[in-house]
Amino acid sequence: MNSLVLYGAGGHAKVIYDIILSNDMLLEYLVDDNPPADFFHHLEIYKPTEELLKKHKVIVAVGDANAREKIVNKLSGICVFETLIHRSAFVSRFSELGDGTVVMPQVCVNAEVKIGNHCIINTASVIEHDCIIEDFVHISPTVTLAGNITIKKRAQIGIGARIIPGVTVGEDAIVGAGAVIIKDVPAGATVVGNPGKIIKLSELSEQ
Image: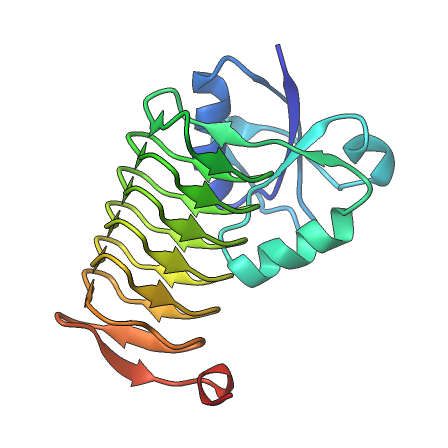
């Protein structure tokens, strides 16, 4: 049985803990820099230490992409990161998952998909063939990505969004819940609606 350390004790960690149990894995320690008052099943929460982290595989259970990236950078060279796939998910044998990525229940990842490090592929989302998902991306529940889509670093695709084939979503972009995306989304942009329209541009969008 593989033993793990879960880094983070918020709501996202509760879902990952359930995946750990479903996969017959052992949660050895739950750690958090600022522990909440309580946690799922009243697990004891520890402060992270290098001595503890280097002995086990680690999953960073933090939903916010920027915060997740900061923690991963801090832990780089100290520990090894685990990749988790819920047993109800389908991941093609011809696809690739990076370190620290978590695939939630009922996800479908089809052939020749490349998913980077520390991504969240959330419940019942569909990633079709030949998509590229870069590091620290969050694909929210029930999202559908058609074939040949590229999602750049730290982008967030909102609940139930749909993206047509061949589209690129730029770094740090946000696609709103239920949006239908039919053309490229600039880096740092926020896009909502059907069809998707830009409602906010960041400094990244103007570079």
